Image 1 (cartoon, one colour):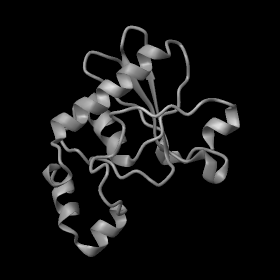
Image 2 (cartoon, rainbow, N blue to C red):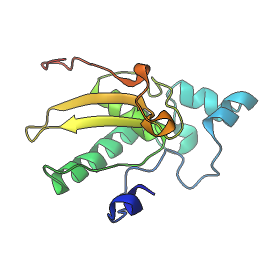
Image 3 (cartoon, rainbow, N blue to C red):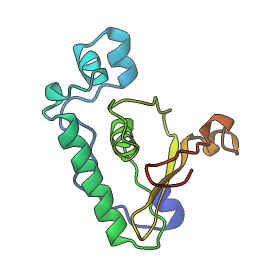
Length: 150
């Protein structure tokens, strides 16, 4: 829908699939509600049940996003992914140890700016302007990165 609205191509990239890619998809809400052991493992940062580990998953996501940035200097790009991918990227960027450190709403938007020098800034987290016409007040976030400004 996003690509159609701006007449842009959809490009699938390796490294942006949710952990457990190829397994039966079950929503996080369902895993949590039913007490599924995959939820307990995932919440603890143990991705072995999904065939990977947190470090590998974060590295794959970071490499995929880095390739997108390199391929589109100075451009605005929409990356559509599941919450685990977003948590992995932003958590790695902000040096947060937990894999699932923020609960993202369905269809929420997180905005990240990456300068040509590689400085990354979180502009918004969990933004939902498509729901009511304006970003929610809890979606705006200012984060001080190591060696950076807030």
